[in-house]
Length: 479
Image 1 (cartoon, rainbow, N blue to C red):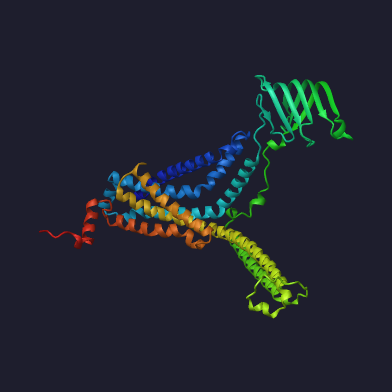
Image 2: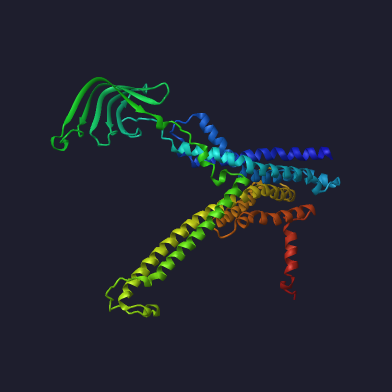
């Protein structure tokens, strides 16, 4: 029996590792297509891109691992059934439940490992990934001057080079507009040719210009708007220095991202949820006090002593105004309108603040439940893939890949829909995030039962007999 268990484990672990890395690679390619514009043309070092891809791949594990478990279990049992190895085991007196026993233990271990990963590793991976991605997206495009194009990538300067020699450093017919004084196009430098040189620390770009002229409108002198002074100077050699610090990747302090819900473990999420709930309670209490204060202000309107000539064209049917003098009616109405506007604005502001804070609370709760549903999904998908593979008896990446994709799409759509409803507050977070496991559980139980009793799930004749048995009374009576 031990040899049989080792054979089953080796047959399962190989496809599991293979499908896991295939799914991870596909998700990583999707990430590259999404952020390709933010990565290309910025002169990033290879290790920066490698770190970004490594952190990104870590965040894709919650999607890749359930899919790999579903596909590998379906492939493994499909191969055993296709080569009649499963039939031989059953003929030897080994039931399907005993065949699945070592894989059930492995699935439990994988689920526990998945929970540990979601609670410990994933928050750190999200922190590293999102902070690095933010810095990469904030980085400017690499310094690259093209022939005949005005380049404005350097802050405070606009440069045009008519021609670049094949060495890439010698430039000709140069025009440099200096906007550092924020006075418009008042200073321009022209040069016949020059050379571009980078300092050893790559912080500054030095332009050595030869045979040129500086033109400058002196708008800083007295009465410059009247006299329009103009300065022209020639040079044989001149140096222009440009700061390239904006083109270097500067890392943001990761502590600024740690309060995000995606970068917290269960303990931190519970503390944040408790704080958010207390904040919501304070907001509700403050809104009630403001509304009550506005009501009291309106209720004290009878203290008005201002005498105003009443508007005869206005007819009042409100019995409250009968208690006041007619010359006070207009003042009372204006004050009531003003108070109503203030109360309406306060309520709108309070509603928006409550909505945003509630949405943040829901997102924290969703991430908290995700840490559990991730590991549960890994366990349930095994009990869908394994019995289904034993039923269809087809291995390889053909039919198993199609069937596993259908079930995984079902799982993903249910999870995504539940998450959207939970974020908007339509469903509680625990209901929205546990919809997918609640649907997968009866499917897994049904398929496991059918595979255990060797039911012909895909037999058309068997389903036809069930159909006629259920709808027997609707069958036509023979003449």
